[in-house]
Image (cartoon, rainbow, N blue to C red; front, top):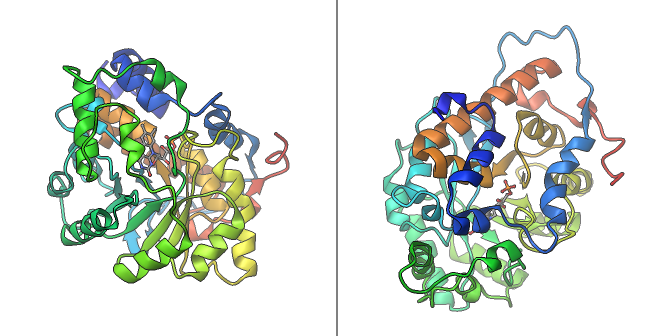
Length: 374
Ligand code: FNR
């Protein structure tokens, strides 16, 4: 269908389920085990309701904010997803970069260690200089590989390092496993191999190979080491409880992403929006909520989802699958259209909530009575 017929992010998902190869659909859509967390990530948003203010001047709604100390046009970003070429063999992660720079609002792109395009290609695909790109790091057991990757990301002008800590081993994604990856002539296997090569090791072509080099012995000491090694702001991606956010802040990290990897790792992890409601008061209690960015990702599909996270104190939110699907169905135009859709939804729901600026959002706009009633 023409792109104009795509009204919301679910439309991209439905379309992707029809047009993607079985392999790409299985890899992109799957969650771990029984996919309880995968569904809960989104369902938790259904348990939060709004308490709008009336008769507020909302003629102009301003979505500008800042993330990691830099001005941001909108309070969301494209989260890192491996292997974008599985769904968009030509454009891959480059088309995401192009789409992110193609709208009136420039949107930051987090680039995966397991990208199927080289970091240079994705950096060169930027539309303009003010467009932010961040590097998502899986720490390699071979620290030299990791040091080289970080230096390279710095040279290319990437402006933050998101260290993913929720994948000491790959989650049990059975949909994905049912589709056997052939190691020979198969397109998917080639993309896999490129992704694994980019991250510093040869792949044997199996999907599991992607995770082989991720160091399962990673600890807080390694975060301290990375902090000394680079001047880039460091954000810990995959935090699931308040005290770990406190620890990251105390160590001088720039922020955390409350995330369970889109429900692809530990099943029965809580929804990030619930973890956010727990975490912000604890950070505030320790006086650590200033100059420290708390992001959330997982299950965000509507402007109202973003608005709820912002009310609870998030500095911004990440979306993973919706952009993968948009990129797979329509390439860079799809990515740009997805950005427009979610931006318009957010703007409209802010107006209806009776708020014209992001800084005016607070938990008082939410009825959280049912949030914990799972
Ligand atoms: C991911 N995610 C991810 N995260 C990361 O740090 N490095 C990675 O390489 C990947 N790869 C990846 C592949 C695919 C196919 C998916 C769906 C997800 C997790 C991602 O950054 C983000 O946390 C989730 O996607 C957010 O959930 P939603 O928006 O997909 O529901």
